[in-house]
Image (cartoon, rainbow over all chains, first blue to last red):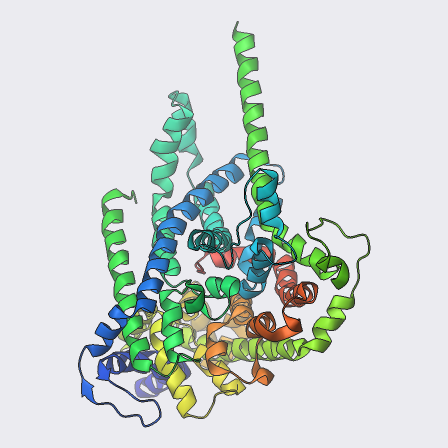
Length: 297
Length: 286
């Protein structure tokens, strides 16, 4: 009976184990092997030597360094900014009654949209062509500014659009999480504080913020991880040739090494992917260490 | 004295509320504007659009011509159908894979259960970017590029959804299971007739989240297909952007964007509560 039960349980698990084994566990080992095979050739499936050359190549590749720089700027700007904006919006949402659901619904819309498709709309809004300066530039002009090509123009302008679009895309998730965190703060705490005559700022910094701090840190950690993996937002705005646009990201570099005109180098792709993994892991560990010190559970 | 102070306070609160509503409305506008703009541009006449040096916020003569153009000049219907097929098959197969797994972890007793479950959970930390390289090679070696099998295979399991479903299954009282055993109901029948119906809300939430994920997937399809006959909508839109409609036909492009965005927006409006609950219970993005 027991043996039969054992066997049956494994049968229930079999499909999941097969798929996970073939498409997650095996690739995980394989990616490390790829990354140390020097001069790997996709066609003949042969390599010269084993070593760390691939990592050195990637770390000296100007395209990778550009991608690294872009990704770091994106992370440093969007993670704090989007978390702060989401917190402000959630506080606003929590303080109102009328229209609350309408606002919540509207704010969530970007979550269900196709990043590539809506990115095209952003591109049109920001792009300057021979026929039109684009809506954003018209706005800038009314306030007395000069037109800027945000899509093919200077680096800061392109970075601005990328950050703006990224924040637009990630906010729904953060607002949702923070609104439900705020709603779950115990009402009696507020009542007690009001009886004690605590000021509004005092209530926010002594009660609200500590109570929702675990969720804020959750958002910061997932935000870091997500922003480091940025890719399709950039494709949506600047097209598939991100190296030419100078707007590639680390993940984009990995895919470019794998496929397309610049592709066919799974070893370089693996090395770059592992470097990304180490960066993300390090940042996450640092985040967890900081949160252990500061977060009130 | 007391009274005027109270009045002042009330007035302050009132002004505060107005400011909050104004700020919230501004952000709502920022969110909605791109949608309005795509809809507006998609009904503008191509000639009229091209002659607008300063973009107009309204159009007096809306036209559906761009939609016709979107479906005839590029194989938009094909992309659409491909995505639909991909979404339905992937979601369906995934449910067949994860439901028994969640059942085994939550109800069945077997040796090594905790160990295997811990191993499963540790897989949640593995980023997709790390495994996609080998998967690309595997699928290519198997000759499955530009096939639906190749598109679907790597995304039919999700450790996270197994975990979510297992947690839900475990909330069903043990007594029900024991009673069913006494009645001689088989495990499989119990799963199908009792557990799935009870956990229907979670099952549906998982399915909706997966549908959203499938509909928007871009990276894997781009790697695995270069034949337009197998493009999904995301790749289709990239293709349209780079080569379709002679580049400058923005209204037709926007018509395609509207067509692509519409299904998910409709699903969102129908299942708003479910989706938002599901996402806040642990979906991730961004």
